[in-house]
Amino acid sequence: MSADETMPPWADPFQEDRQPDGTVKVTVYTHPLRCPVCGNETFRERTTLLNTKGMAFFNLEWANKSAENFICARCGYIYWFLPR
Ligand SMILES: [Zn+2]
View 1 (cartoon, rainbow, N blue to C red):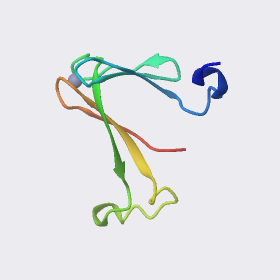
View 2 (tube, protein in one colour):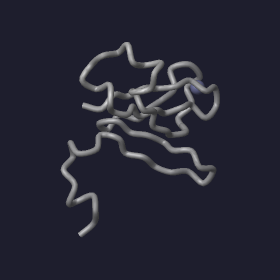
View 3 (cartoon, rainbow, N blue to C red):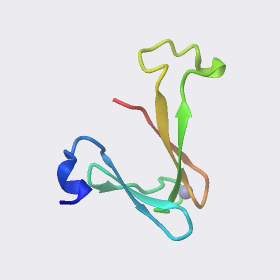
View 4 (cartoon, protein in one colour):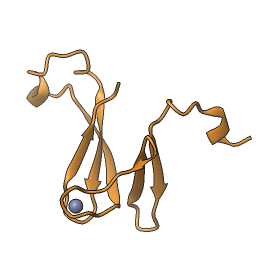
């Protein structure tokens, strides 16, 4: 039994296919993520905490969570995904 079979499909909408150069190809709810600016399909991944001083004015329930970022490996465009 693989990890994929034990994980419900809604647990992680982000499917990441890691490339040899350290970038990832990302699928979100089965839709391939593609940079809207340059059309590239490889991204660098990071998470950003939303409770820093600069973000404090976002006094919302997700303020203490972290956002998922996918940064286009070609042009640097940043996708932001907030946790549900
Ligand atoms: Zn791009």
